[in-house]
Length: 356
Image (cartoon, rainbow, N blue to C red; front, top):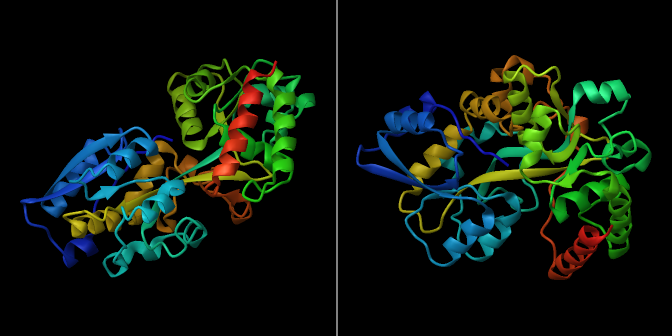
């Protein structure tokens, strides 16, 4: 997922606290996710300096922090690594009295299993593993993208052969296949996983590729018509197609059987020298106008309820970015797998990849 944080600090919080010009907030962040503009505005309003270091994935971030890296105040971990960070005592409990804007958060995305009381982390960027598709091609073929059948049903795939990609991710693809079968991926048994594997093996001959990166460009230029991928990537593909004046759009819808919801969070490191500045930044990110700029730029589903009135007009009715409550109830945040489950999934995925 691409993560970009935009916004301006709330006037209320500025009245509550000011920082001295010599103050510095050190952020360990996803590469390319915080714009220069927002850094400058936060620095000006807070009378502080923001210094960033970057990582490319959660594993890199965890390894560096676990090895004893210091000097960072804030980090933006994905939800599935929060429990590991808590166990390693890497995170500082949040002083919610310093987060008045937490009242703006949508309860549907709070108090998840990875941090039941949001003691350590607050959701900030949401991305749905779902279907992105070429509107003109699927309309001409009379294919419904609102079901996982567009990825897994051979009868549907026969009309799309060579024009479908799926993520090169065992967890994502198996979760989608389990949902297609009507099963909860967080409660799946070994028998369920083996049934899902058969669904994947049957569909695989119709797919063009397993792709984690190129599917965005391929959708945008029209080479691929359907992808199992991330909603923020589909948003970018549509932006690229629109700017290139393509004769089609790249749309994105949730699937009726359910979807996996990926959540990136804001958290404060236990070794932070300036947890006070980190709290100010977190509160700023929960202001509606600030949070809306994130969605308007990268198409993330937003956990801040007060952001929605400030969305771009075309995003206010988007089925993933501005979802209805019925859809949201079918979105699942995947739990951490046990070692035995990881070994099983690795074995099944290897068998899928080598199968002809």
